[in-house]
Image 1 (cartoon, helix red, strand yellow):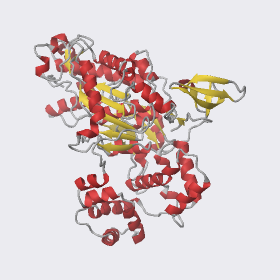
Image 2 (cartoon, helix red, strand yellow):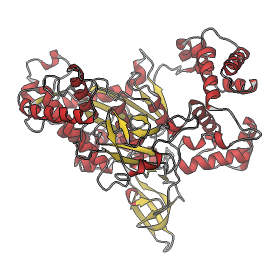
Image 3 (tube, helix red, strand yellow):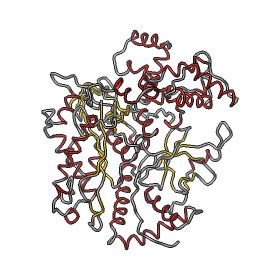
Length: 619
């Protein structure tokens, strides 16, 4: 996935004409030199592009790789990290090569690959094509044995030695009739483990935090914009109404992200679902991408000039966020995830303060629940409710852009936007870092953060949750086998807001393609609605059903829901959530999308919307 580099002397295109960036101008503009005419011009960053009609170099998707391959890529990145984004000379490369006993040509190759793609996955070793001195010939099965023994036996309070680890791996390989790796290979794998990880697993988690953690006892401030981002979720202190009947449907949830350096709000997501991997990933996608589209979608006038790939995202320690998919998606863009230590509230001080400030403004809106019953007093939140979810989103976006980011922050003695501007452009006391790179393929980034599943492809297409999908792009992969002769599984991404299509990752073309329902007459539904349909069928003791039964149940439920909307808050809430999901999904992937025709299961919501709990139908 390519990015638009905005550093001085970077080559860009303006109106399809080649140009060179001369210098930063303001938060939304740079000065360029048109290479043909030599004219100097100040232009909006949003008007610049990378080379038109140039085919992007495609790479495998992050889910393609084993844990061992991914660990090796991370190790390589740590080796070249000191050489990235600096004016390096040959001596710098020689020193790194000598320190790690790696040929300098290899170091240059890694640097070139990473700087071209900007993703960790290009550093994954291609095990199937390597050999000779320094090349690994280990199979996936051997890698799995090594990884399992190290995780289960070495990283354990029993504290066995590396030699004992090797003998255990040797024993398992011999029993499974697998080639035995060299003892030095095992010792190298163990030596590459982080000191903190080893101490935490073999000694004490608490002692590891004291020894390797933040000794100051407070969360460190970012040294520059987008270095450290904090994200958290909270129920919003307001009741919202549906758009059709203006009746109360409940309290929404806010996912919120703040830049620690400037205190700028960099992203948010408001929904009727509880906190989940999906709500967090939507917030992460928004904080990385430019905000022009967000402002258009919410019809907010103003500027929100912050974007970019952060170095660190600090998140709550909730189990719904801790999953391999989230970690790999962030690692691929060299984003480090740091989990808030348990019972250490100071590590979330910035985002907690922002949430408190935001809720104090919400308390001024009709329908607020306030923070507690004592504060609410005799105020009737239900009776006074007036905001729909869409109106609340627009209000909060307006608050971010034209109030919070521009208001004087007490700890900064300036506005967050001004602090961010200084961090980017610099002043007499600060050397600005310059504009962050902008993601060119926004769709690819959004899709990357969607939940993933793996499926085989049959003559009838692909079946996910008992619903079939088909497109001609799948034809070449029908009934293909993997190297062991088993049915090959492929990567599919799911947008929970609209499962009328799934995103298929083609391992040859190395891009995503939208695969629609096999029966295109079926209506669009969300994954939350599908969960409720299945729940209903289960309550009816209907088990052996197919997609036709699912959509028959959906049609009947909808007919009854129409009658229930005037009476049932649950039905109104589900109806409004459905409308919002469709609107946002359409905004993210418009009909002219280039992809619109073209591992483990994730529980994407902890507490799904209860759409049809009070409805009883017969099939």
